[in-house]
Image (cartoon, rainbow, N blue to C red):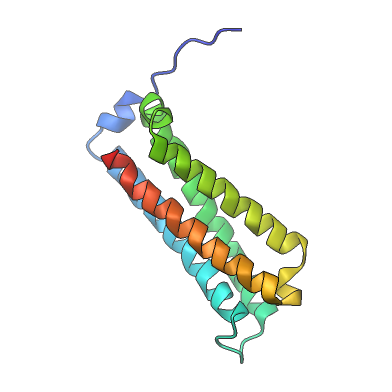
Length: 146
């Protein structure tokens, strides 16, 4: 089955306020996502030992999920503004791969009960998480220049 080419939503890309507003929403989502993750990751590494890891995680998880939701929704709209250009951009594709790996790492972290175990593998997963998310953010910034 052949699908017609999708040129995206060019009006979104050319609107003087829509695209920049979406970029702001995307940035706020990233801040919520990464900020809440870093707090839990620091606690896994022993910072703030007076705070219960489980209680902090319960507080942070809804913030992380909300941030991720903002990132995904705004990212889909940003993508829809220029889908052909994005799919041809290697940096964009690398970003998608990094986000996918970060999601798999998070799924494995929670599936194995890493918060309760708080062991060496849990700490390694937090380092991997932070590295993947920072690399994805860097790729996101470089998309416009590649």
